[in-house]
Length: 192
Ligand code: B4P
Image (cartoon, rainbow, N blue to C red; front, side, top):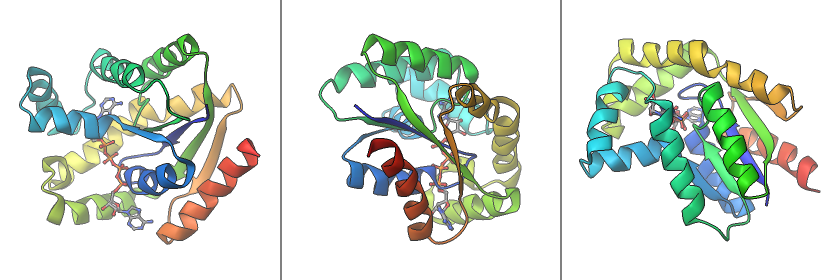
């Protein structure tokens, strides 16, 4: 099993590049953002609680997303690897993920960290908000708060994986294909 974390601030291209990576490497895509939005669409109690936080740009509590990932891992026992998109977003989530993968006798192979300037992130997210219908993409104050949450709680997750020498930094500005090529090269150098 080869497992990848696609890491980066909101709007850095995680969801966009995930679609291409899962197709090329035959991975199971696990996006906590998508899982939470499915809960919201189904109006579950979890989704209704998560929506309040997501609409103001805050992170959802660790135990909620860890529970969702744990269930998703159990539900997919026979895949050749997972692509984690938007998870882990805190050090507690990273530690929990390590434990869950250890139980399955596997681990994270590589952490690909997309780097994009703050102004480009804001531009991309507000632009997506014009068509996505996502309430967290339409208000600039909320978009900027998501970036603050990233700086305060998520950016340190890269340091956690640096201890294990697993992080590769990728320039996240350029064409989709250029960025995809850079990501693929790093993966290929690990799996070949
Ligand atoms: P996510 O769904 O993870 O959303 P995101 O970070 O905004 O998206 P992403 O980074 O994947 O978007 P992309 O760049 O592909 O999280 C939403 C919310 O859910 C969080 O704020 C939080 O509340 C909650 N949440 C999720 N996971 C959580 C966790 N683990 N713990 C706690 N809370 C959690 O796309 C952005 C735009 O850029 C698109 O329009 C795309 O077309 C464009 N784009 C992409 N690449 C481009 C390029 N190279 N050039 C130009 N535009 C590009």
